[in-house]
Image (tube, rainbow, N blue to C red; front, top):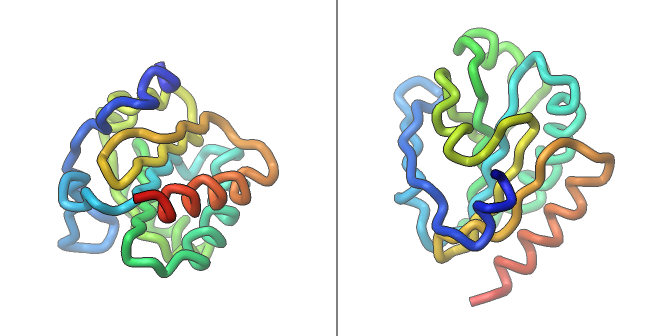
Amino acid sequence: MAVELAGKLAPDFTLEGLAEGTVWRLSEHRGKVVLLDFWATWCGPCRAELPELQKVYEGLADEAFLMLAVNVGDQRAAAASFVEQEGLTMPVALDSDGLVAARYGASAIPHTVIIGRDGVVAEVHSGYRPGVGQAIRREIDALLKAE
């Protein structure tokens, strides 16, 4: 299902942010390259992947880029504790019921979706493999250079 999303318009969503009072709407970020990473605190591969994505996030201060770590199914307090413990500074959204993850084909996590400036899904990565952060960085750089 995840692969079928590539080349199609990314489904819009609105999610509450981990930071109090924040709301994330995908449609508000059209014109930017967007990375969505679906993860959970109990997921071992997610724990391995998130530090790699944090490095990607830190290396891309470009305002034409948004990285959003979408927590799937954890309570706010558990997600907040994990984010603080791991030193993650990327924005985090809460998909408490997993409905957004399901719309993006995230039947397993981690599940990473890269969306081009035009709102079309460019890349989908399911699962974790060492070095995925470098591959994702190359894909994002290519999309940022494209018009």
